[in-house]
Length: 112
Image 1 (cartoon, rainbow, N blue to C red):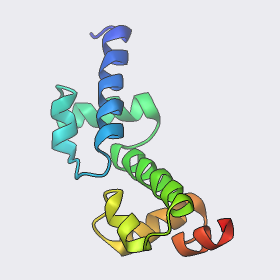
Image 2 (image 1 turned 180 degrees about the vertical axis):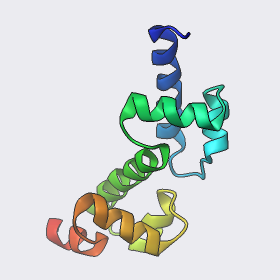
Image 3 (image 1 turned 90 degrees about the vertical axis):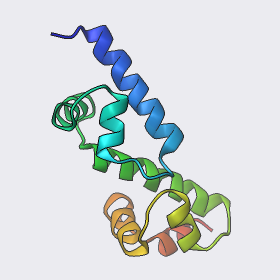
């Protein structure tokens, strides 16, 4: 059995890695290796620690950063999409709408 301290340190390492690398492709395998766990163990551990799946958490980080960029910089939405780590504008729009209840374009227009 692992101690709470070990788990706390492990989740800190994982969250720091996600924060530093969210714009790159992070596979479940990669992140499990960083946590020194099997993918199944990691999925259970991460869900217990954050109440979210790894993919859901990663997408939220990417969308939050995208929304900040949309407000601060006037760069094309497609560039924002790829810049925060999505490989498809369709998926980006879908995830953005799910989290922010609006499209990236409407979000930007509403802020400006």
